[in-house]
Amino acid sequence: MLGLAIFNSCEEKGGFGIATDDVAPVEFVSTELDINSSMVKLDSIITSRQGRLLVGNVNHPDFGALETVGYTALSARTAVQPEIPSAAQLDSVKFNFRIGYAYDTTSSNRDMGLEIYDIGEEFPDTTYISSNTRQIGNRLLASGDFVIEDFDSTYTMHADMTWGNEFFEGVRSKNSNFTDQNNFRTFFPGLTVKSKADQGNVFSIVPGETFEVIFYYQQPNSDNTDVVNLSFKMDTQSMVYFYELKSDLSTTQFAEIQDVNTPYENTPKLAMLTSLGLVPRIDLSELSTFSDANEGIIVNEAILEIGPIDDMPDGTIPPNFILLYLTDERNTLIPNGTSFRAVQFDGANQLGGGNAVQFFFNPDDRVYSGSITSYVQSYYNDGFRRDQMFIYPSEMNFSLKGLTIPKDQVSLKIFYSELR
Image 1 (cartoon, rainbow, N blue to C red):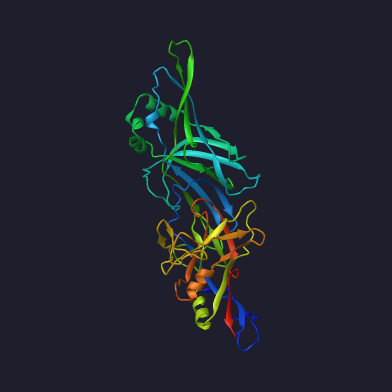
Image 2 (cartoon, rainbow, N blue to C red):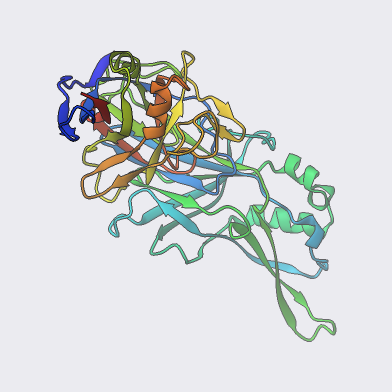
């Protein structure tokens, strides 16, 4: 493996104590350990039911062409469908949606071209990952161009009226495909949501009751003297949804990364890319050498730093924090209940779970840093030892955030004391 940071072992030392025969002076020492690294593309990044339906495409300077496509089932809301008389006429059909996230946050890049198709195959209610896909149907149900000014507004586009009339007549006639949700799911598996070509940004449609189809219609009033305007809706609340990430690293500095759960040691830089599962894998086995060479010491503090990270595209921001997830020769995450085995924060049981240490990003020095003192103490005392870890970004399952790191910008500094 290639070394991330090669530091000499000449420790920085400082004395403390009373120069008498009765008191042994204490020497305070700091040292930085060599850390080896590689890159891994993790399998099975779950994107279903993560609160976001990412839609868009970008050409990233480090990761090449990236495109996200959203898929969601539709609820016919069969329990609350209206009684529609034969004299009623459909007026219009509209899709409403809200936006909850933007990859590029600059105000000059808020154009969004959106297309909605049907899904052309069965869409089971199960767990989906970012490499899954569904067949896009041949029917364009709606298309629109928008400027996303804020995340509080509702955006609207007109749906295809031929499709709308089919659904309207299905509800009016009490067709079994529209009176039973299971029948409806078989008849209409769901919606494909994708951006128009060369959009240059990725947005998240908020799934749920605000992502809806509203059918507006008119019917005569009770004495046929006037017309009443009414509506009913279908939405995506409680329905299965996920997004797919299509990527092509072949023209990038990470072109050699093809297989999942496989370490690649020769990439020129380290990188993280959420949704794709691209993460650095680090080796802390030098802790074993350190422990064997320094008997009888007290580990006072251990600080891990990642960065400064490289400059990112304008308008993009890095993940808020990172985690250290444990791995092994299989190069996969190790399940631990509903999460994964991780280095725990100081004071917590390193054999336990639920207290993973978080390394927050400092925008001033562009560094992720945090203390793993308890972990190093446990390692030194032979209480718990794991050498292989992933540097794992927050928001892995519901964002598109990528960054690169020089290989020599990951360091572990240990402060300890020993008797002279």
